[in-house]
Image (cartoon, helix red, strand yellow):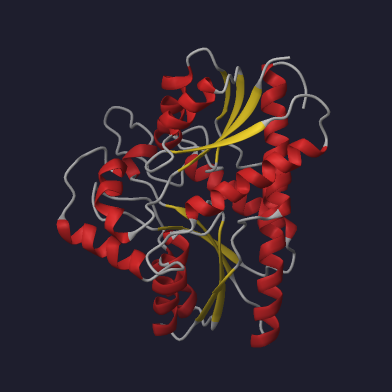
Length: 331
């Protein structure tokens, strides 16, 4: 039997505020970044985590890997399947992890990116980084899993709890905003025919240059279908970058403005593009969006992140088994 493994890939995050300049150089592939942008990101990190300045993304991803490894061990009687973690922009880097897998004698690996919605630009970078060091390791790389039912079940479980609480406390129907991370418009823009203006999201699936926006919306639809208590919902893209041209929207801020104009007094926000807590949740949502909502006279609450969700673990285990099955054998 070949020595098989699972490789989880994530964005990565620095461990301290002092490491942020080096981390940002990785994110932008070494391109210069304005000092004021670096300082603003350092400020945001300084307000989150425990201790302050520490994003929990790496710790939580390692915990997700441990839970997945334990789940896979429960129902397979053959050779244990080890779960590895590689980060695109910080330690442990994908290249270093794959080198370790080779040293450990791994022969086949199911590779799962912990960003369920597939953008060819971003997920493509993960894929290239893993395959560049794979050598003799046969890899099954999962391009995207936005429509995985167990993922939607996990998000729905979290949403149901906060929505019930806020609805009781406000004695009113509470709208929901589903969010995913924004990306530069140029990365998903459909190519225009001669003489036509470029089409922007949302576009039809047949016209989209990249599946990311459609897949994010599909995940939101699946979650909403599972929570009939959702009386009304909207979709928005969050955490738009400060440079690089226009990023896709609508933004969360614009969406909050619209809900306030409609008379909403409370809103529940659920990010469906993130699988654990990190700066885009702990600062962008818990601090910045909450402050924006408060200025509009609205209360903003969010669902708990999946983090160590048993349903997320089951979803990852299902995907891992399927990937390993495509490589030959069963788990």
